[in-house]
Length: 365
Ligand code: 13P
Ligand code: 13P
Ligand code: MG
Ligand code: MG
Image (cartoon, rainbow, N blue to C red; front, top):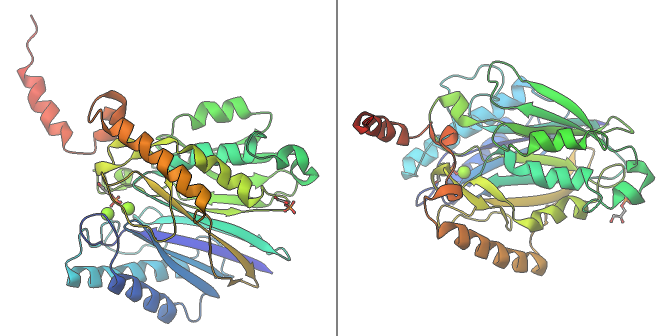
């Protein structure tokens, strides 16, 4: 049976700043998906990660389906009305366009989708991150799919011996999707050369070279490229099929132990370590550290099991403590140097005016 998994995520308002959506907002989203999705979807799961709400749904309509995208857009619009009524902060924050035009991609919400022939057992993980951008996934998924130090299956499982194809997108190109396909293992130096630049080159998808089947899909929207100014961070989602011809769940999770430094944090303008958190976690501290959650499922004929919370285990408590130390260490240097993003990322915010005024005060002597 050919199944599509679509994950669509947006920040449409939250309590107390950029922290957590209200229960009323989450209920509205759930009720609306149920009501509008009756004829369209097989199953769905609603969750939030920090201040972002995600609709995960299964159906048989393929990727980029207008009706599925319209459903999500209408649900996010209905949610925005509740957010406005409750006076939530940033009501409708990620809905950057006025009218739906066929595909929700490029309108603000994050989208990750995959269509595939369902295996007899079909495990996958839905990742959602808050207070960061799509490049946050570059390192963990590079390690999980291309490095035998993390993915033991690359040397232990014949099903993975041929490696994977990495489709990488240049997110600076806004006119069209500018992509390149590179093969692991032989192109890993080229893959690393691109993926070192998390703000420009982003993994969009990964495919098994043995079967051609898609293993992974990541949302790659950069909001400032759509809005022309800073409107919030791009808080990316990812769908990853696991086991069999793909890495085992633990091989995909293991690199998240690093808590690598990513862009985001307060006002989307800083660098902070990515902290793996439990499902439905709120945000605290300095609007961060950036967080990532993971919900693992199995599906049968498109029907979802309940989610398994992949970062809800004593091991990750220890990791979170260590990452907290990394977060405070970099925060102690405030705005200085590596703690804040370079000007190329800040130029969508208010610092531009300040620097323009200052430029006039400079004298050549
Ligand atoms: P597969 O059976 O999917 O190859 O996974 C093996 C395993 O035990 C993973 O840890
Ligand atoms: P969000 O993108 O999660 O709304 O965060 C925006 C922000 O500026 C946090 O300080
Ligand atoms: Mg927000
Ligand atoms: Mg957010």
